[in-house]
Length: 202
Image 1 (cartoon, rainbow, N blue to C red):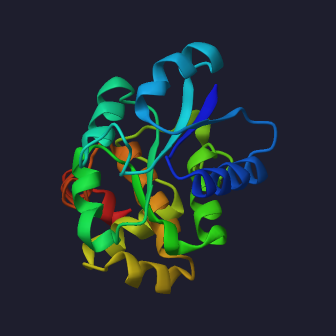
Image 2: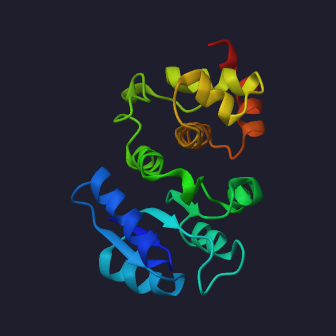
């Protein structure tokens, strides 16, 4: 398994690689400057564990890189790390298949926290109350129950971050895990699932 960092800006790529090696010592972190290098890299380094993708690459246009990775590797976590303000493209990135959107301006600490959370298993994060008996449609962790309630209240990511005392990027990772657990792709779908399965009353 390997982590692939795809960014044509050498300094930014090296910075993300350094963060990943700090949060996951011993991992095989592979640097690529464009998507066309990926197939050969996977053949050499092995199956991907996580993608860190810049939006603007020499061989991509708009969201084509996100769509290509999601189509080719539907189950691999995908973090878009871009200089473009989140307000401009985050929603489109998520609709195209990205799991989380991180602005490069967020700073090393926030980026590292988000990537660490994406690489940890549910049990490592304490997300499973009882991993051996978990059933996706009937059981959520305490944190995930909190998130469902806050989504039901209509809170934004910023509101949730303030209430929980964590960063917005960490909120995004928690939501990604919640959506993955429920098998949904959006807040609306998560709330619909929760209401249909009585999760708001747990």
